[in-house]
Image 1 (cartoon, rainbow, N blue to C red):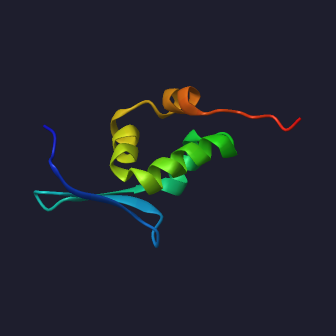
Image 2 (cartoon, one colour):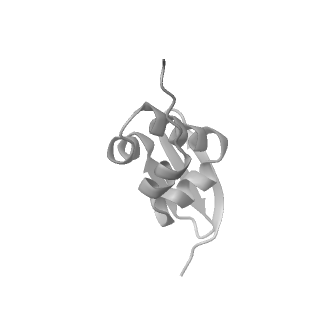
Length: 82
């Protein structure tokens, strides 16, 4: 059973994306812990940071329902300095 989300936002003080559900429940995703587990380099961290700040609902959906590793392989661009 899927819960209906009332709100989703990034809390800069706690470093978490916080979801509030219509039934009164709450879920906080620790973004630092996700970065440490999923991102191998600064480029991947940057991709996750973009989602956190610009679309926290998509970030939460990716973490809860998606394949973070596959997402990062797909969207990360590596640019060499040469």
